Image (cartoon, rainbow, N blue to C red; front, side, top):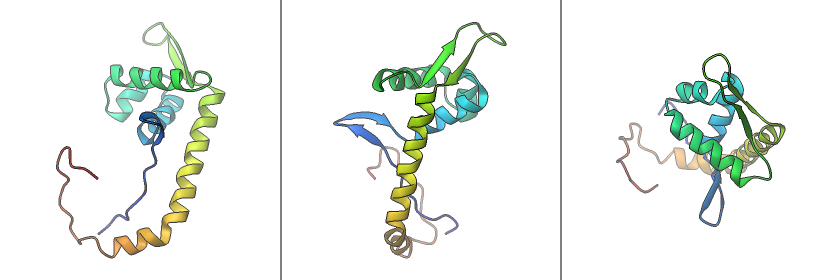
Length: 126
């Protein structure tokens, strides 16, 4: 096997998904691209999906994680706020802490994984 197993963290409040790897990737892509549309293209998702995720993040934290300026190509844009940078950094710290804590157990698990595991089945429980 060429890749090692890893942990993916999803932060939830009850059943409400607050933040996870997809939203973290989107925030990072917005910071890089300077726009929601550019970030969506980079991540291979629709603009609508990206916008809905941004809207969800902005509603579920104490302030907006992303601010956007309308205006179309070359005029508008989006930026990750200071709160957005802090949320992303805290999430990345949680991921790093979890990976360190699970290191030995993941190494044990890796010894039990088939050399050539098959593809997942859509909707397959984890």
